[in-house]
Amino acid sequence: MQLIEIDTPHGPANAHLRPAARARAALVLGHGAGGGVTARDLVAAADAALAEGVSVALVEQPYRVAGRRSPAPAHQLDTAWLAVVEQLRAEVFGELPLVAGGRSSGARVACRTAAAAGAAAVLCLAFPLEPPRRSGPRPSRLDELDAVTVPTLVVQGVRDPFGMPPKAKRRRVVQVEGDHSLRTDLASIGAAVADWLARVV
Figure 1 (cartoon, rainbow, N blue to C red):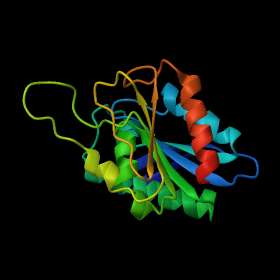
Figure 2 (tube, one colour; figure 1 turned 135 degrees about the vertical axis):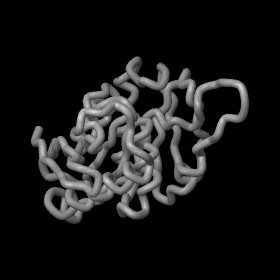
Figure 3 (tube, one colour; figure 1 turned 90 degrees about the vertical axis):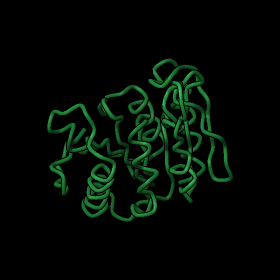
Figure 4 (cartoon, helix red, strand yellow; figure 1 turned 120 degrees about the horizontal axis):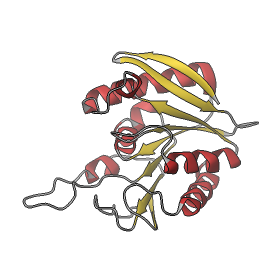
């Protein structure tokens, strides 16, 4: 694995590169709000992508590189992400079709920036559809998913307290055993990602 530091408007980000031999596409994955790029579901997705001939970059947002656990505001996450994608395209991936994705907060970033990043597809692991149950209204983030106009895969734990996104015309939703952590059935995550990538890239 190769580590490269990428300057963004909000500080340096890190990209952990796992190149595939004779790559036919590239997958850029972001982490969750308080986690990192070693999350088990991210690693399972990366392993599956490599087996399908897809190069992978696991991206650490600047706030995590700086040692903070609390995430930056959404607009900062999106701006930093787009800066990383731009440099990866210019220096690493070239003209390869790009799949953007991530887990939880990282999935939201990938959805919000899919058009600006020129993503050919979007991969969402544990998309946080709505806050866990509590009294009062629960704001939905379905609009972020619905705004994506390219093929999308959502892999969601059947007991995820953040809810279950619905299927849609361009959106496939695969339910696997587990909760929001997606730690229970890594084999099913990998199989779902591999099958989907084989269809979309």
